[in-house]
Length: 380
Ligand SMILES: *Cc1c(COP(=O)(O)O)cnc(C)c1O
Image (cartoon, rainbow, N blue to C red; front, side):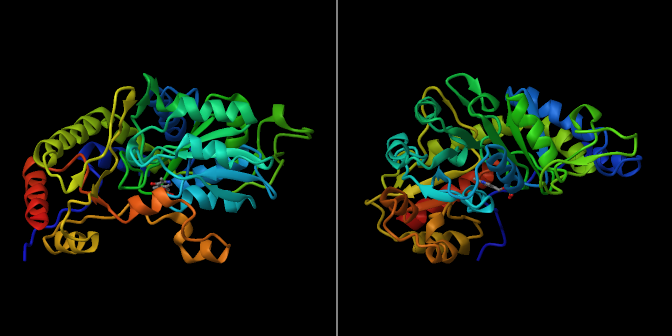
């Protein structure tokens, strides 16, 4: 059929990005040079966070955050099933148990009522995913975290640029993680970061990404001489390279433009698909500054065709739709751990009907019209 192929997401790289990377490749530092603190400072300005720690991926960022929260064997951490596996895997990395709380069927974000019901004496933290770029109900989650003494971690992989009741992303949780994978708002190839406003967490995160080793004499137990450094706990090599940070820094200067382009795509989708009774378009509302990483539509009971039929027909037409997400605990690995179908009925029901339409800053008006017309034709 069509030669045209529209992916569900993709990066936007321009000549300035390429020049920024090339510049670092010609410099003295390929890793941990001046670009890292510069990118971290820019992330703080963009998100309102006091501190940012760059790492090698969004997954490494989640691992670091859960570790810095002091989570370990015997602990439970509550998260959503409607997410990429990394949001739950990070809990397993530190030997703790992921506890899945169901989603709100309107917003698709974790339901604070389900979170409160899932708290036990072993619960130590919440990993709240701002699904598709829509912030979770953070006031409700904060109240639960405070009541039970839990650490509140935001998985902001979808949410760079999001705001909640006027507050920026970097101020919504004790720690918030970002991903710079090419499908996300800005990219460094692979990459991620943790945002926090807590100096103590910041120092822990900084050392965690470099084996738990400090070279700062003020942090050491002894200081025999200038050759000396100390490993104070078991960390990892989660350091981003300097040329990745240069790319991130260059990309970040375009974030507002990228966000505006995404909002424009949303307006077009709402124009073209808003009247279609076979589709439920993603919710957004006052106080929730949506960052629009994804555009997940749900087929309604009015849709005459199954999700698989619609998915296959869109792919046939060169439209790279996707499904975000298979409930995490449906994966065979989680089934082996003892999680069972039926655990989170709302997430399971929504999953069966979801389709992510293309959403990225480089989508043209023409692309969007093509997607909408194709989808409307398929739905009949
Ligand atoms: C992309 C993503 C991650 C993982 O990020 P990587 O950089 O790919 O490791 C984690 N959580 C969510 C919700 C994501 O979408």
